Amino acid sequence: MISHQLFNDGTRQWYYFGRDPNKPDTLIDTNQYLVVTNGEGLLLDPGGLETFPAVVSILSKEIELSKIKLIFASHQDPDIISSLSLWNGLLPGVDVYVSWLWSTFIPHFGGGQALKSVPDEGMTFNIGGTNDLTLIPAHYLHSSGNFSLYDPRAHILFSGDIGAALLPPGESKFFVEDFHQHTQYMTGFHRRWMPSNQAKMKWIQRVRDLKVNLMCPQHGSIFRDQDVIRFLDWFEELDVGSASK
Ligand SMILES: [Fe+2]
Ligand SMILES: [Fe+2]
Image 1 (cartoon, helix red, strand yellow):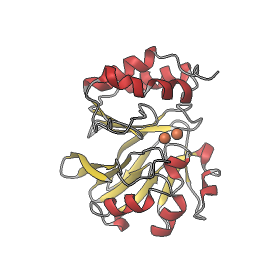
Image 2: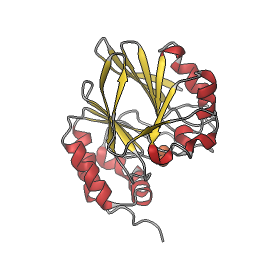
Image 3: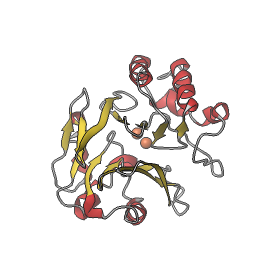
Image 4: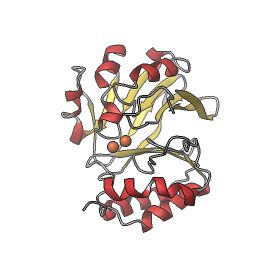
């Protein structure tokens, strides 16, 4: 698994973990992110049971594990949070935040600890003496209770499954390099997994109001600068919820 620092202004750092060459082919590839503020960590979509050892191993090179104060799951899927019981075992008492819709479903992944419910309108996280990391509603994209996370300091948007690409082996570019070429890896995914054009337009409007330098999805390559705008324009045009027979 590789590690990549996406941002550092001295008090806040963003790290990427993923692209594990030893991952079994039976698993979809996932991107994990860590935001550190004044030494305290917020882990975003920590991943599944199978990738847990690799994530812990690489993560612990960047932060002392006891400094991870919060875990956020954008939605309920196994590739997002089936590692819950292992994280609870490793970090007893860590606060795990999920949409209130999923707060009594996700504990079926185990761990025996109550989750913190995020209200539909979103919230901000208190971490490292700051409260600017903001959850933006992204409901129905693709989960009924789903959020993106925006960092107004780093101008980074963690977008979960929005912007996800299913990259073939050998095409796993870290950043999107050729947007037009990249759309072939996103079109089927978004048409099938995103059920609502109305929800899509609401999210796009919210994101267009933000300054976003990096848009970081949970699968596939990261979008930079103008490619973020290209993605929003492409997504706006795409008729979603229309791919099934
Ligand atoms: Fe998902
Ligand atoms: Fe996913």
